Length: 113
Length: 113
Image 1 (cartoon, each protein chain N blue to C red):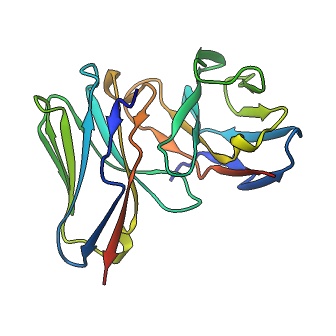
Image 2 (cartoon, one colour):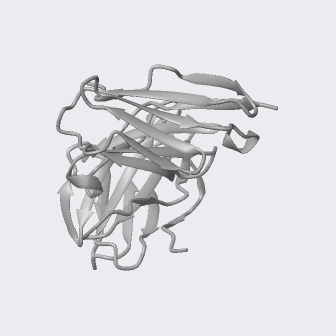
């Protein structure tokens, strides 16, 4: 069964350091999403890509967060500098251009100390 | 502005009995609703969905009911099994599944053996 791959699974970083997460969506899926889930809350969308273009980054804290999907395939989410409040699960998901099929990866658990 | 609400943070049910998880929404533009199950340190996994043109969808032990006039949906699990213990998220979106998901805050279901 096709999966959304994410790495690393866990990351501990000191505040003010830079951190990056990687996501490889299901092959052929045109749309890629990055969500953040803070403990005790539901996932919230940070950024949505259609192919290599950003279609929604309204909830992305752009002063410290950046995301790219240069060739319309895999994607990187970066935080610089990390803050204590960034501790959360970062989830990547993808969906096809047509039809249904919204699949999440296993996530990256970030702890900022 | 919480557009999808799960008002019960936790629920305990005896093994073999029915589990009923509830979800309310406020945005009348939502036309597709999904339930996800999440174990700790893993990404959400899709359980079942329903479009706004239906009022019921069934898949094995899982049934989702949609009451559009009340803007309410529920997930029924029967019979409940110990492996069902997890956090359940209700989510909604438009365009029948290929746009960003808006999640509720989740309900932690514990099945008591």
